Amino acid sequence: MSRKSNNPPRRHTGAIIVMILLMLCFIAGTVLMIKLCLDIPNQEVSARPGSSTIQLPTAPEKETAETEAPTETTIPDPVPEHVVSTATIVSTGDILMHKPVIDVNWKKDGYDFESIFRYIAEDVTAADYAVANLETTLASTDNGYAYAGYPNFNCPDEIVDGAKEAGFDMLLNANNHSYDTSSVGAHRTIEVIRDRGLQNLGFVDSEEEKRYVVQEINGIHVGMICYTYETDNRADTVALNGLPLKAADKNLVNAFDYNALDTFYAELEGHLADMETDGAEATIVYIHWGDEYQLKQNASQTKIAQKICDLGVDVIIGGHPHVVQPMELLTSTTDPDHKTVCLYSMGNAVSNQRQGNLERITTAHTEDGVLFSVTFSKYSDGTVYLESTDLLPVWVYRRNNATGNEYNMIPLHLDQADGWQEAYNIQEQTVNAAKNSHARTMAIVGEGLTACQDWLTQQYEAREQYYYDLAWYPEKFATEATEAPTEAITEAATEDTQSAN
Image 1: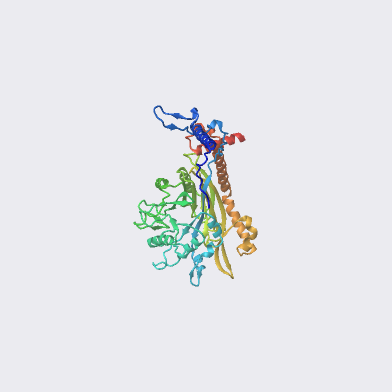
Image 2: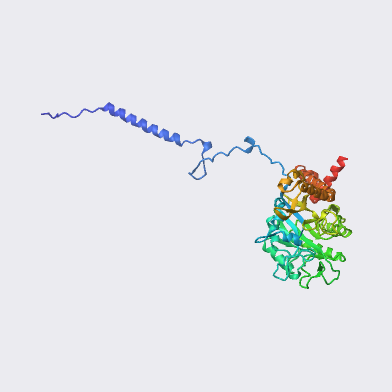
């Protein structure tokens, strides 16, 4: 059992004093800490007069560009104007459908003209656009006309199928045989061509239609028109192959009268102006003219070609003589800086006109034709130029052997002559005949072709140099900034010539 003490508890006075002192020190330290934290340096704290609000300093601005390390800036090299698009147009001569040519292409279930174009298809399709002269009508046999050749041509529709399958895009139908089966044949020919998805040029279906085409080819707009000569000199009559056109048709064909050339020139000039309004950047005139079987152009062709050149046309391509005629580089008499490439006749694409068949044909020149090409180029500044031209001789070969009768257009790439025998399934003597055809054609066009190619090459090189200098050395043209590039090109070419001398 515990005992409860009657004495009071002992007081520890010293310990209490120590504890009080420690508490006072702690309080003093806390106050000091608070004061130190609030004691922000004067240069970093400011107070608005009459306010207790404290404003903290804004962040220091970044160092100025002068104090930063310089950044290297790359200036791109100037880019000269350059070719952005090209358009190559290939053309061939008269698809002259004589009766023997029609007959050998009858097959068991209908007509098939594939064999005519079989060997040229690769060259045709290599171009961007292809044109041929359809020298026949397509009246069918349902309108009182039989299939026939000279003098009034009428051919099965399948000739258009053959041309299309070979790669042709346009058929010219303004020639002296366009009205051989009267109005029904002329209009049905247009209908068949268009129904097959091809364009026709030269004879329209109504007076509301334009008499020309502005064709866009790879972004380049090429204006094309086709004319044929008339065979009646009366002012109120248009006749083709001696057949007067009906009143409703005489204004539907592009035809000119050799005895009224000023009327022709004025009309053509109007169409060229309309082409330009419609966006044409280059121009080609196809024309049916000249004398049959003559190996050189006549005076009328020369005169007309010069006037067409003076009107500013870029290319003239002729047909009708049934033989190849020369090529020439024409210079405008009104603008010496303008030149026109002219091929007076492309010869035959296919026909039965062969040496020994007619009294008027004493050589094999009627067996010769061409694939004639021109290339236009568009530069990055939007200007379009005739860049180049070329010509491939073609021989019309009449095959007559166990495999069947055929008329073949044989492209004569002379550098491939060693392979002709195998490629075209022909005998060695036939290879020699093909080489003779090539020689005949080049003897006629070679000099003119070289002149045209040389001039176009010079123009191209001068143009490229001009655009290079304009990009890299613009100060050379500072005083000529408003001049047309063609003028500068001409000047550059002159300077080069003078330097060479």
